[in-house]
Length: 239
Ligand code: ATP
Image 1 (cartoon, rainbow, N blue to C red):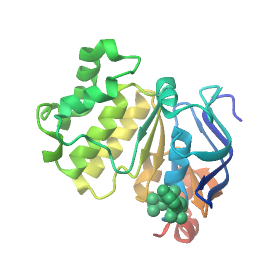
Image 2: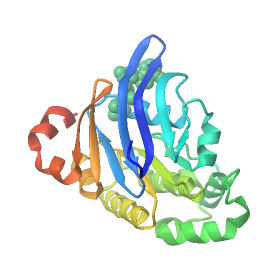
Image 3: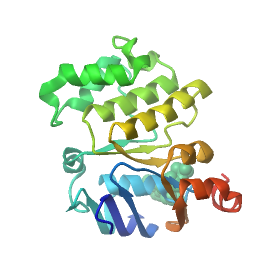
Image 4: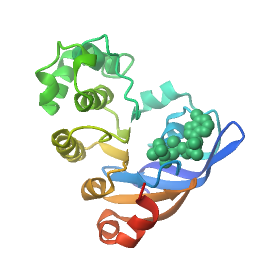
């Protein structure tokens, strides 16, 4: 484990019922990095994020976050420690406004008392949401809802944010905005663990990447080296 690791996953195993999905996954994310997990459908990327967040019941191994072992901690405790998670299905509350959804991210966070300052910070970071604070969330486009899901997770000022397929199914102009946003998050000091099918775009903004196949990490390298390695991309990243 590196001294500057924010997240260290070591020999992580996870099961859904009798199915042994993660079979000894090990990787790390250093403070300030953007790291991407890539791999074909069913490789175990989503299960990795869910297990790190504490949402998979049967698991063994070790997950150390910011110097603490968290494998047996409940998900809310991991959230309190500064782990943010934007799931693939977003979990936006459609009947609430944009502002109310952002407030949900603040409830129980250590920044709950600074609501005004947090909302101002989020509005600056997400100008598209700033114009829509009173709009009902389910009347927004899929990409805008995805931005809102990220904004809600950022409201609690996580030390590390995990995002599952944030660019999936959204219009190209918003995909561009989103990848710019990830770079801005990094500049602001947030550490990012990304799962992406949009491999080329993800690698362009990442420091390093790990490739998963059938529940194990099969390869890892700097994002620049992987961008240049079309063989690896063809072998493990085509859907
Ligand atoms: P995708 O891009 O398709 O989401 P992934 O790499 O994220 O792929 P996972 O969603 O982690 O892959 O799935 C890994 C394996 O676990 C797959 O074989 C999948 O069918 C299985 N799996 C996922 N969720 C469940 C569940 N709730 N119950 C049983 N099996 C599951």
